Image 1 (cartoon, each protein chain N blue to C red):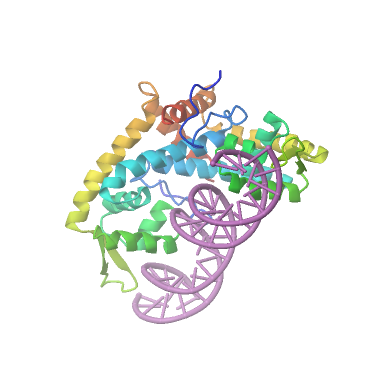
Image 2: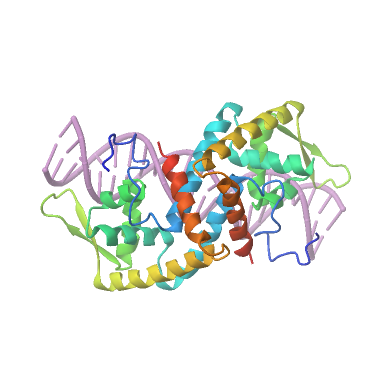
Length: 156
Length: 156
DNA sequence: TATTGTTATACTCTATAACTATA
DNA sequence: TATAGTTATAGAGTATAACAATA
C-alpha cells in the first residue's frame, strides 16, 4: 500500500481516500487533466482550448457577430472581446464592419486561420480520445451521453 | 424545439450544437453545475465547497498540519493559509501550536465545527445525489468509476 | 430605449518568490 | 540546509458598470 516512488512534484501525490468518492473532487480533477491534455495538443498551433471553442462556434455558424459567439459559448460579451482580440492578433480571424447593422462586427476566419483551425481541431479530437481511452469499448460515448444528460437536467 | 421561455439570463440559452459533443465543453459545464448545486446546498452552513474539502481531509486524517491537508488536496501550502484563515474566522477549526515541532500548526475541529461539518457533508452528499440522478440505476456509481479511471490513467 | 462593442474595474482561484521561525 | 507558515504579488478567467455608436 506504500508508494514505491514519491511522484514528481505536488501534482498528484496519491488519490486522497477522503475525497476519492466525492464528485466535486473527481469532476474538478478530471476536467483539469483534460485541460492539460488539450493545452499540450494545441500548443503547436498557438491557440488555447477556449480559443478553439470560439473557432468551433464560428465554423458552425459561419461569419457572425461577437455576441452571437459569446451567447453560444455561454460567456459574457465583455469576455469575448479579449478572446477575439487574441485570435485577430494571430491572424486567425478578422473583424469586418457589418454594413447592414453598423453596431456589429462580423467575425470570420482568415484563409490561413481556417487551415489552422482544421488541424487544431484534429489535434484536440485526438487529445479527447486519449482522455477517454481508459474507458472500455462504447463506454467513451456513454460518458459523453452522461455528461449531456446531467447538464440538461440541471439547467432549469 | 423552440424554447417556451428565454431562460433567466445568459446562463444556458440552448446547448450549442457545435460544442455539444466536445468533452472540453461538457466537462467544464457539468462541473459548473455541480459547483452551483453544492454552493446552494452549503449556503445555510456558511462554508464553500473547497472549505468542505478541507474539512473532509481533516476528518479523515485527524488533527494535522496545514501542509498535510494541502498536499492531500493537491493545492499549494500558500493557498491553504487563506482557507484555514476563513475556517478559523468562522470558528469551525482552530490552529494550535505543535510542541513537538514548533514550525507547525495543528489544525483541528472545534466541537461546534465538527457538528457543522457532519451536517454540511450530508447536504453536499444530497446535492451530489441530485447531480447524478438523471443517470439511471447503477449508472451513477459507474460515472464515478469512470472519472476515477480517467484521473488515474492520465496522472503519470 | 435597446443593443453591440468596448474599457475600466474588481473578484476568485491559484501559484511563485521571499521572509521568519524553527529544525 | 531544509521545512512550516506567512505575506506580497501576479496571472488566469470571468463578471459588472458605464460609455459611445447605432438601431
